[in-house]
Image (cartoon, rainbow, N blue to C red; front, side, top):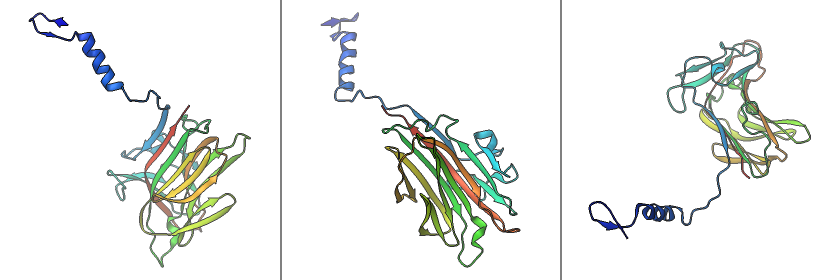
Length: 237
């Protein structure tokens, strides 16, 4: 028994610490979570996305991609992409260069989530909002593949191996695309619904996420918006 300077008896401070230690640790797993690398962009800025981890591809530049308050999934801004002629424009985030999704083991997890705004209206020129989302990946053999989500005249579709699979009628508003990799297999979700299971089965390394306009006819505009791009990679033992 310990007696302090005031004559009060009780447990020694070292014993109190030990008891608290046992209370808070008993029954807990000592397994440490794997290291996590992630990237998030909600586009809550007014300067170039090139200053925030993105780079331009095709004929894209600061004139084609700007943050705007016109539409926003959350917060005040989103990223607007537009092309006013037949030039293809795009931007990309290099996951591999940022150390996200490199050397995917069987227990590792990777998720890409992106919200996009479709202003589709039936019986109007549907080509105006045809932007494509693409995620590239590598197999151990060195083969480079990719998965894309796009839209035809009235439906959404994704690249299922060598074919395109349509799965949902287009609708105006915000939609979420999610690509998830686990056990080196990739699934695709649309608005929280699983629309493609094991669409790729040998995903050993993640490459780049690209957002680009389709090749459209001269004088036909292409424009769309994205928001809350989130990339997460969890390395597990």
